[in-house]
Amino acid sequence: MNEELRDVLVHYWPHVVLVVSLVASLATAIHAAMTKEDVRSAIGWVAVVIFSPLLGALFYLFAGVNRVRRQRVAQQRQLARQDRLRLDRHEAKQLPVEFDTYLHALQRLGDEVCENALLTGNRVELLDGGDETYRSMLAAIEQAQSSIALQSYIFDHDRIGQQIAQALIAAHERGVAVRVLIDAVGAKYSRPPITRMLERAGVPVARFLPTAIGIRLVYANLRSHRKLLVADGWLALMGGMNIREGFMREFAGESLASDTHFRVQGPIACQLVQSFAHDWEFTTGERLEGASWYCANLPSEEGRGVATRLVLSGPDRSVSRNQSMLLGALSVARTHVRIQSPYFLPESTLMGALMTAARRGVIVDVVIPAENNLKLVSAAMEAQLGLVLKGGVRVWRAKGGFDHSKLMTIDGQWSYVGSSNVDPRSQRLNFELDLEVFDRTLTAQIDQRIDAKIAHAQRATLAELARRPFWRRLRNRLVWLATPLL
Image (cartoon, rainbow, N blue to C red; front, side):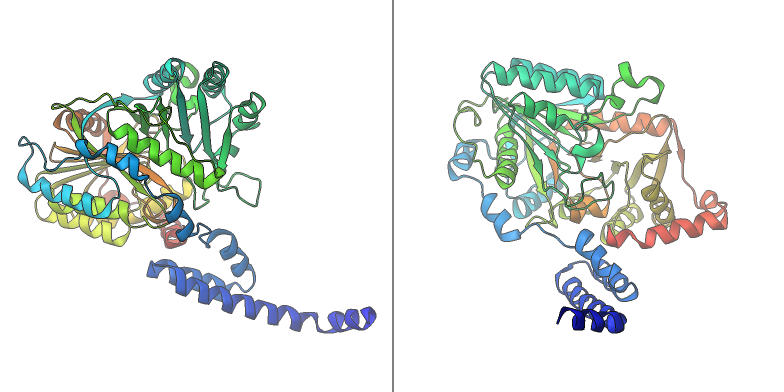
């Protein structure tokens, strides 16, 4: 019987491969058409599957399937009732009188699309660069008395990574409850991974959504880009900064990269702890509860603190939240919009909103790096620049070291900061963590930082793009065509 089967396979293997390819391609194309919510993504994947039989199906299985079960995530990420009740007295019923009344529409939008309320009584401090950020991280870890929650996309096993890891180990040894959550792909950015050092010392550490292939995948989807540290349930640091020595002048020298992070205190820290706790439970099954994680007496800037909201987004039930917040801000802006993003690839809806704001008289400034660390993204960005330039958006290529900051402000009153880029990954494919902040002081600081970049930047023009060699423009457009698949 085995010999007969072997003979059949030897003679008819091309037919078997053909049937398997057709069945796999048909099933994969149906899955893409039925599950992708963006029409361009659905068309792109169906085309890949049809024109690359079997290989396209395998590629889709690896890169196109959202393995995050929405129902499971929704169940495990429900905010605990007792935590919400604790924050009731801090909820902002309306914005203070110093803000223009049209911004009330932004507050209403956040109330409708976000699970977190806008909270008053907070302090939000800008940390510019790794020197300030890592110093604040180490201080928070060393001063923690009850708990430390640390989450990052990349946590390198380099000199600053080892310093932070040693501080976490020391905190664990003195009895502080420590939990470290690193994205499974981000953990592979250095060898050996920092997780081994922490695990050997007994520090509870976990990897978010492990991948089947044990290599670093720069363009992998369904990753957690959230960067967060919370000490004792009331002091938090969040923003766009990974843990890498390239952001420290001491180690990087002339090749120093820039980024921004934020030190926050007040009731907003409870929302940040909840975010970490839900991601930790989703990854490990362990529920974090009690006063050691949720500060019972939250220090707050009562009566004079800033109104802040945590905005969580990701490829689960919060898939459109990030885009809704950006679209809302662009629709109400009246004088000036400033955006800084290392990866600027707005989807058509967001691109339309940017151009509409510019055409109705709002100054829209977008700052991107002159030299990007991701070559494919850089090519796709260049291919798309002409579209936004024609709509009146001003695009600036910042000179100097690579800047990883993700910042947005409108009219000197509202800021949106955190881990999200203006690209399809942040809008639809990865887990992000951002803060919506109503505060003139912080917004002015961010505006000054962006304006300083603009002062030493080169403005992109249509004429300059037209002078690019044809082969480069063609390459950029071909790369740009692949963005719906990202």
